[in-house]
Image (cartoon, rainbow, N blue to C red; front, side):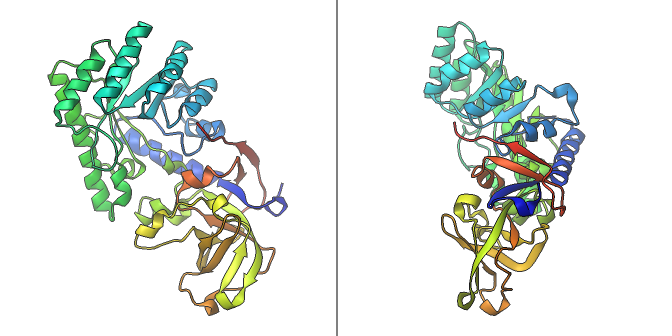
Length: 380
């Protein structure tokens, strides 16, 4: 199949770029002496995941991270047994968790409050066996978690330890996405490490077990200078990268492996618009670069070979229509690209854009051939 034969919009995945991104992250974390537990929520595909472990056949069963129990079911069904479900557990999911564990999946869960800890402990007692649980630590005031110095940390730890469910601590430095320099990301990486290790030390000092110390985000994993006291790192979007990551200097635009193939279907010459058949249903509503130094609209516009076209962005979107304009807003600077021409659009947020599509069309750089179709899934 050739690109020109595809019905658009279509999700493209540049295999050499993906493989290079994976190899770079694996080498970096190996050099820091920590285990790698890649996050599979970006790819949601066994084919992508196999590429993640292609250079590490001894660990073909994991460890991995997921963001839904549907992902846990799917990847366990493909042979991955060491799985961390890295979203705070809801009581209505405990039966699902227990069922997976009963079938041989070493599934671990997380929580950050006493109410959830008591629910997990009660369910574990009912089962007559522990449910391995990590306490989520708030290392950056970004989202969820227990403060490392909070009294509640030890209270939660004791509740979980009573039946053997306390497995460790974890954090996600989500605030790293808002850093404005590499120096700031390095500082955030050390803060993430130090605060999570401190939480582990407090648990151990209280006589509580803390075998796992898990940290991670793509920015901090990319720029961490040391990971003393950490046992594993999680990261996910590095597989594909996106414009948000490029905007904070975690990657270059040329590292972005994911794009959406669109077709020019019309012109609005007086407004300086090209109209394409890829709207926000193809790109997602994510405008993550709007808060960065350079607003990339809904994505940078490239030619069919993947080469960015100077000054062109997808500046607006309707459900099935994309509006391409020159970032200056000057209609005179917009090349009136011929109707029927295919373009590639690089996404703001790879996870959100990929979630709009059911499959990847595997390509190799500028070559026009589609090498393979890789299925992906979504939902909970």
